[in-house]
Image 1 (cartoon, rainbow, N blue to C red):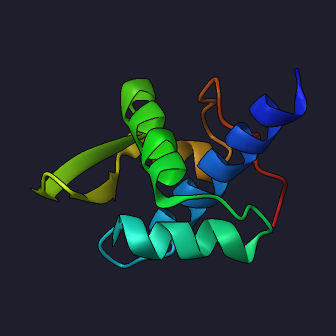
Image 2 (image 1 turned 45 degrees about the horizontal axis):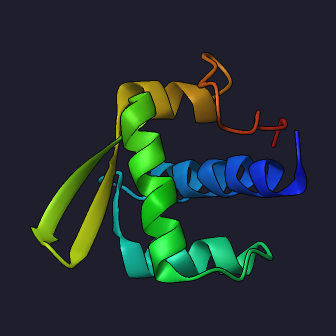
Length: 98
């Protein structure tokens, strides 16, 4: 696995954890981009949107388009189970015990 793939997998885990920490399991792309940057991944909003779409393709989140230019991520049961270490979502870093 190259660095770019490792970085993407880690960012996807950060996104899932950020959503899991919200009472309603939802966050907009701007807030998710800030969460990803907090953990050292300084990337564009488009890159974060790409990671959100990858997570949606994997079934870990649902994407709500508030506007064609603005996405909201919503955690699915599978995404929650990955964060809780009860399931594995391929393409997302494995969470370490908290």
